[in-house]
Amino acid sequence: MLVRATKTIAQRNGNVSLLRRSMAKWTFNSSSMHDPTNEGKRKKWQAEDDMDIQRVTKYAIIHNLVKQQTITIENVVPWFLNAMPEAYFRQVDEATRLDHLRAIAALRDANVEMDMNLRTTLADGRRVLTFIRPCSRRGKLLSLLNDIPWDHNTTGHLPLSRVNTFVAEDDSMSLSMFTYG
Figure 1 (tube, helix red, strand yellow):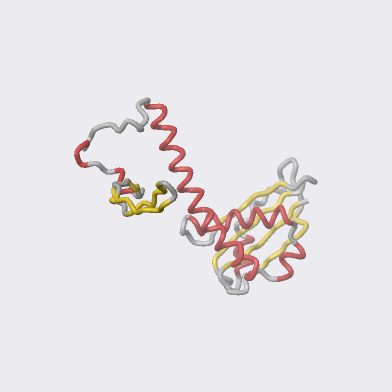
Figure 2 (cartoon, rainbow, N blue to C red):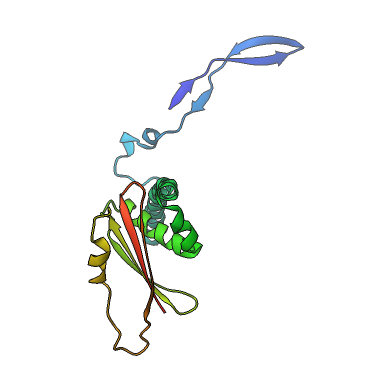
C-alpha cells in the first residue's frame, strides 16, 4: 500500500527548513500481494520448477502442522501435569511419561476420543502395554483384561509382573500399564 509521505526535515546552510517531498512508504500485508492486473500470470518471485513448487508446498504443510501441534502440546502439558496423580510421577519413568504425553497430545490434536493402546519395549527387555481410555468407570480394569494379548504358549513369553492404573484427577481419562518380564 503506497502512502504519500509528509514533511521531511532538511539541513541547509545551518538552517533547518521544512520541505515537501513525495516519499513512498510500503506496508506489507497479504492483500498487497494480489494484483488484479496480473490475474493468472506468474509472479517473477514465484518458483517455475515443479520440484521447487512441491518443496515449498511441503514446507508450508509441515509449518502448519508443527504450529498446530505446538499449540496442542502447550495446552496438554500443563493439563497433564495438573491432572495426573502424584503416584503416576513417582512410579512411571520420564521416558515413558513422555511417550504417554506424545500419545495424548496426538489424540487431542486429532480431536478424537482418549482411546489408545501403546506397546513399549524397555531397555532391559521388559514389555509394557499401556491402555489410555476416556473417563474412569467401574470395571474398567476388568474390561482391559479382555484386551490383553495372552501369548503364554509362544516362545519368548514374558509373565505379567506389574499392573499400574492411574486416573486423571479431572476424571477425563484413565491410564493402565501392564508390564511383562
